[in-house]
Length: 284
Image (cartoon, rainbow, N blue to C red):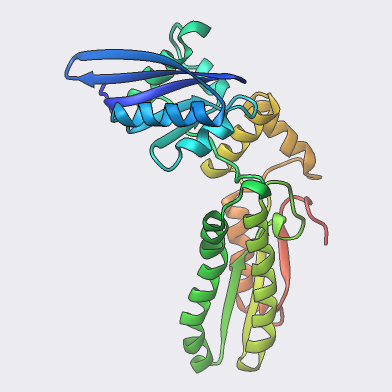
């Protein structure tokens, strides 16, 4: 198989130590070097320096419990990190033992055989201003800039539909997603303001709040949630399904149908409203 990342590393992360394997490929020759580091701040900084000295570009590790988090935060600015669901790695055909976990991860990463799970935001005490601003720039500033650009044309034609996408977490917050929830709460507020401001011009503004949508992006969220809970991915999906009164996930078509309705003449007398397309997750 083709080697995608000739200078990569696999990490086997434990509570007190990190076993690291650097895999270097040059033509058909592959060499490995192993070292063990403490999970203290000093130990992780030594790991960072060693990987940098080896000119490593990509680093892979399993999402096991919470042990990976400090490792991730130390390395994230210097390498392309791949946080893989442990069940996903175990299900890849091949032989490995606990002793060689780091080597196995490095081999899989080099060949592009593991994919990264969703990485949740840091807890509030570790959340940086840069990360907070990044999420709001995308989810909130993006709505503002797009609206500002299109509104003059809608005012000129004295009609129009503004349909923003918020989220179920724009109505009820959850732990560990302060920037995302803040941005989605704000989108609902912005849309209500627009509904008042633009009503004299025949322009409506409404929100659509998706629930758990069956997409590749949300699959990564479920993978990471499952890993953090010590569950299989199937158990993670079951958890979310059981949380929904209708016991079924949403599809992109479900959301498209609601957007199409709000964009049509049938919705000409609806503005400032928020519509949940979530199988009953939110009921207000």
